[in-house]
Image 1: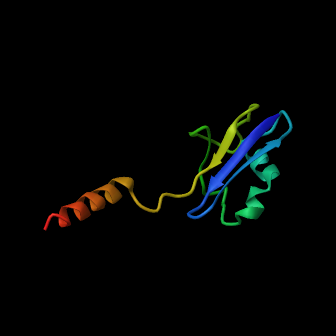
Image 2 (image 1 turned 90 degrees about the horizontal axis):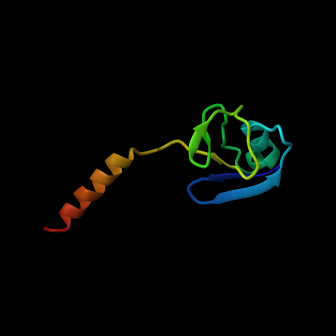
Length: 94
């Protein structure tokens, strides 16, 4: 079956398409992809994974055509970043 595995860090991204055995799990597909060798900072014990934007567990089965995503930890709260930007815009009025 054909699946994709994708990951992005702050300055590069990678999306790999590959064939995996029909009974593969998310973790098996990720390991099969070789992406862990390209991005040694990926820690499947701590990072969340998903299929098409929906969080799943590593032992979840994959289906033909799935896009498996490995998520990075959020380093800043999006609401805080937005508030800061709005605050910065207010400074421009002076």
